[in-house]
Length: 289
Image: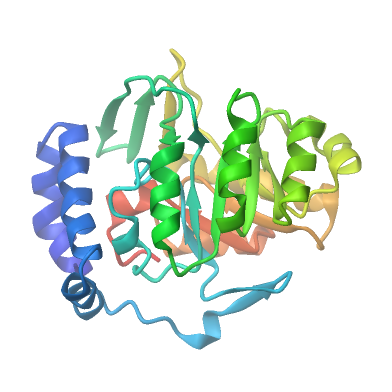
């Protein structure tokens, strides 16, 4: 849908619904469009999402049609990824993927502060659901998040690595998981937050990762995950610190708080090679990429 129709018509209606209902309606409609050839033509016609070849970049023999990707938190249950993959993105991030039973989550949207709160913590993707989507195919490079402390992490890597351009290990990586990623001949990326930054040099020395997913976060209470616009300054700071510490060579992917094209440009100026958008699509519309 064009930005004018989303911001003026659809967004106000969706924001009046309970948060989970609004998300389910929006992603449900997009999912139906994305699963049909006619629907995909509608998305292309209304959105004008054809990418300029000048945006294309290459890293480690992987071609990204755009440096802007879709982050994992916009559609955590993969209800509309076939449609969203046509929104002008250069890559897609999925996860965290788990083989464990999922806990119930509550969702809150603050349209004034432009934040989305998930309680408690992350929304994970069931392994069977991720596998089903990946088997159908997404015509973009795919990054898959895996929680290092998840008891099913090895199973997730073993089953999904063949579909992944890279595996992002979140938390404290173990030798077992790192070796498993290497055996699968995909790329190893480490997740970097303010909390894990002090261990970064040691982790690089020990595991020699192929890149980093750097994520700024919003301080929260009660074990909640809060994503939104105010995380962008934290992401900018982290990207700068990672570059200062590791130099220009490693791949750095930045995510957290990108709600405006200038946010993405600022992160690239700080040293990000690629950026991932999530909550920004909710508040700024599908023209953001």
